[in-house]
Image (cartoon, rainbow, N blue to C red; front, side, top):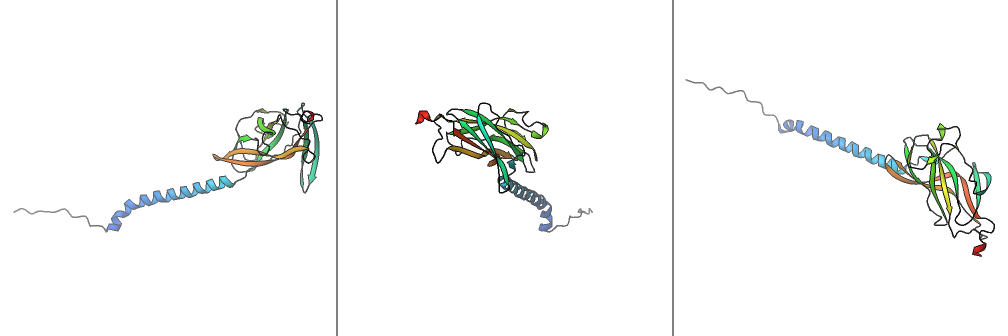
Length: 219
């Protein structure tokens, strides 16, 4: 007579207990994704609102020999700077420099500066040279190289040289507007790969006016 023996049966676990090991990894992945999305959203919001760029500590005076320039220092309401007036002819070009500082906590890539904002075709400005790190040279007037997008580290200052072109039809002789001036420059830059556009106070107002006799052909 044969006796059948059966192996002991594994106790049946409740359904909730049996599914717990399968649910835990899914919940962990969902939590990690949620945290990453919140962090990414906060990073984008921060990068879109941060204003890291400001005028640098180095002030330049126009040294272009082709330009007839007068410089006047101004100080009012706790703000100091200069007014540089250039006498020009239609079609003339000259250069001027300013410094820019990154007061933010992360590096910033400077992509472009200047343009035609606010001046149309009368006066255009574009960067032609730069000194990526003014702190590396005791003489701020040396070390300039052809302009290209560059990285400005936290707390670092750079020098930018702009080429100003006076339009062929430009003539500043009206009694109410004998000159055209600006002290802000448009700057395109990237923070953590996000492109931003802002305005930089250069610390010096540039005024262009017509030289004596420059408007005679227009009269």
